[in-house]
Each structure stands twice: as C-alpha cells, then as structure tokens.
Image (cartoon, rainbow, N blue to C red; front, side, top):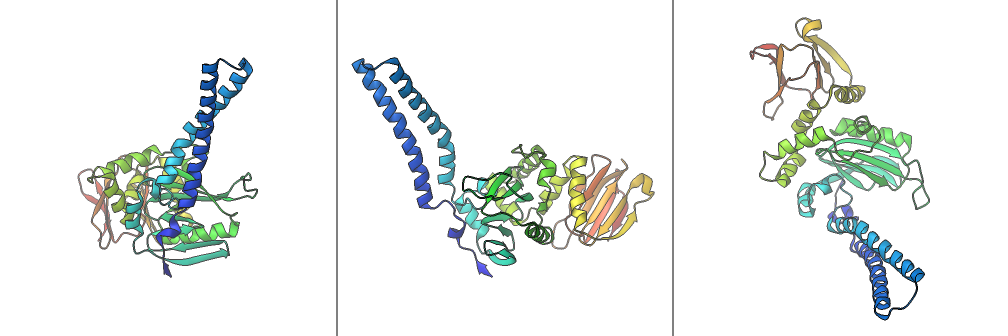
Length: 345
C-alpha cells in the first residue's frame, strides 16, 4: 500500500503543455505570414491571380486550424489532472486535491508489467486513469477496432459520470479478456460502479450527455450553495443519489441495470407482498434487495441503513422495479394512506 502523489496523476506536464502551445503558435505564424504577404502584394500591386489564390488558401486554412485548435489547447493547459476522467470536468485542480487527500492505493489485480489495477477507499486506478467510485455511474472496457497513429492497437475505457456526462479515453495497451473479467469482478464487488451498463444506455456511444442523470444531478446541486460543494459532498458519499438516478430511468433501462446486478449476486429468498399477482414481491440477494411492485396501491419505499439517515422513495410509475445497492437494515413499503403493507424492523 502506498499514498498516491499528485504528480503521478498529472498527464499535462509543463513540457507537454509547452509543445501544445508551440503547435498553436506555429499555425498562427503561418496565418500571420500569409496575411503579411497578401498585404505586401496589395500595396505593391504585384503577382497574379494564381499566387493570390494559393496564399489566400494557406491563410484561410491556418485561420481555421487556429480556431479549431484554440479550445482544446486551452482546456488541455488549464487542467491539472488529465488522468482523472469525469471528475476533472467537474472540479478544478485544488478541489480534486481535496478529494485525493489521504487516499492510499493497493494493487488488487496484476495482469502484466504494463497492466495493473489499484484501489483505495474511494478510487480505482485502471491503467493510468483514476476513477472515482462515487462520481462514476457506469464503466465499459474494450479494445479499439482500428489502429491509432502510434501503429499499435490500444484499449478503450468508456465512462458515464454522475452528472450524465459520457466520456471515452484511450488506454496504452490492449486489454486481455481475462483481465477485463478480473477488473469487472473487483469493480462490481468492491465499488458501486455499474459495469457493462454504459452501452445499454448509449446504444452506439454517440451521445455525450444522459438527460435523466443530468436532471437528477442538477436537482441535487440546488441543495448546496455551489455546484463545487455539491460535487465534493457527492465525492464522499453518492449512494443515495445513484439510487435516485436509477429510479428515474425508464423501465427498460432499469431492467438492464438489474440484470447485470443480479449476475453478480446469489438469490437467497423471495417474499410475497400480499397477493403476489396483485401487489408484487421482494427478492433478497446476498448483497441487495430487489422490489417489484405491480400495484398503484403501493405508494413509497422507506429504507434505513446503519449510520445513515432514513430515506423515502416515492413510487410514481408502475410496473416499478427497484434494487437497493446495499442490504437494508430496515425498510417498509407504504400504501397511499401511509399504512405499512410490508416491512422489516
């Protein structure tokens, strides 16, 4: 076990940033040179149409390059932590320092000398990228179909943020299939990140935001004086928000989430709620409870866990399928009048 250094997380070193700026300045110099040449010809009245067209084409291409390169350059140079995807888009460097303070990482999976996965209390490290357990909703590992400009095939990491942001990053090496299964095992068992969920929500990976997750996240942010404070609070504990986000998904999306959850769990028992055909049932797994409610007469689910405040989830749509992230210590299901129709104390 070891404490991670801040420098280890910073892909954007001063040299790389200087090279990025140098490329921009080179393109800008080409545009300036072409503009000066055209100004000189305009004053002297020299050269023909062909020369003018060539120089103007160079000028236009350089200006377009500067315009396209400007925002990526600024974004790259301003970010301190390029190895913290999702989170680096929500917080600045000092705020990420607060989240990483005191984190101690331990190697949990060794795949080869270039491939390892590390874990701390609140983070995973997959290859060179650090992933927050609380601020990452979904994760998908795979390999690029094509070959990047380095001439070798690479791995690919797709992430879904708690704010609904969808992001892809390129990993330095190919991902062995056995390695993927090992990583997924740890992430499912030790963290709250849902594996294999990203592509179920984003069919082709074209979207960049998930509207449902974005809306629920923005509602949470209104409870705090600033978005920054909201993200920092969620970075410490976002379990309740993650359950609210799942509850807000469509019925089909919920089914995908629960299907993958159940694959990693063992069914312990099924408990009927009144008439099973009318009111539904509760399935108890080794690490969670699943509630399937099929009646409008059921109004709310209340869950209380050791050391946590009581949580109440309104049942608005039916049929309704819901699964808790942890086994509740105590829960009740209420009808529209507030009467307990099923519960455990």
